[in-house]
Amino acid sequence: MAVYKDYVITLKSRAYRDHDALVTVFSQRHGKFSAVARGARRAKSKLAGQLHPLTFSAVTLYHGRSTLETVTEADLQKGFPRIADDLERLGWGMVLADVLDQLLPEREPSEETFVIMLAALDALNQGRPAASVGLKAGFRFLAAAGFSPDWTLCGQCGRQVGEGPVTVDVEAGAVYCPTCRPGRGESQISLGSLRSLQYWLNDYPNRFGQADVQGAMEEELKALFFRHLLHETAKPLKSYQFLSNIDRLAGGPEGEKKA
Ligand SMILES: [Zn+2]
Image (tube, rainbow, N blue to C red; front, side):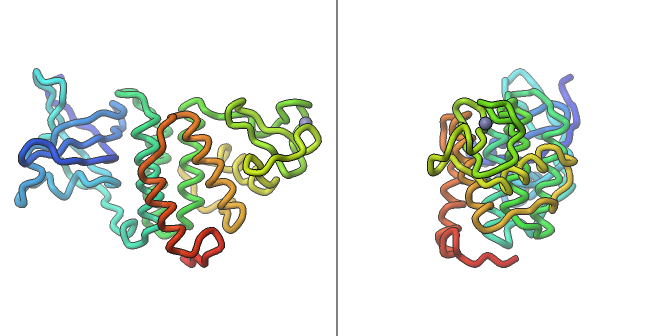
């Protein structure tokens, strides 16, 4: 299998040698890996525009004696150009790419994760509420990677959680009803947020725009997501900083965010 074709979502691209780029892609049939795009940084390169982060392309790859594969051809299928029109959309797109880069094991395909990422990029490109798209996809990625507490039953009394505020213990991977854990600051979310989260985790993987959150729910789910992620990867995402800066520019959590 020296030469093969696949579909890829580009997660990352960085300069490599004089004129090449080293791209990290999530491919449909071969999972995540890095490959060299020869000459991609030359102005006239046919590869240049086809392997930007947050794009979807059909590629031909060559696997020679080097451990790194080479992208020999790339044909852009979807560029999602409108993601870059808006900083919040771009921020969430970068977060999702980062999450996949960190969470996915090398060369293990995951059809569901692939479908979710493609649909999430589509939804961001269409201007759907960026945080809800990012959170649904992000929590699904965590769940697909096996990091998913039981969000429905109280970790102590075992009853269905039907009241808020709900305490989430990321380390123990459990949620607790207000009777068992009568609240401690930052690890709490409202019942509404828990319901949205449960909805997203059980919804069709490629459907966005349902159970969208905003305001306080958006903020607490965002805090929970990044805390959860940090617990799993033990490494803060660079894109998280970017997203936080945008929030600050928009006037913080209370700032107005209009689509
Ligand atoms: Zn309980």
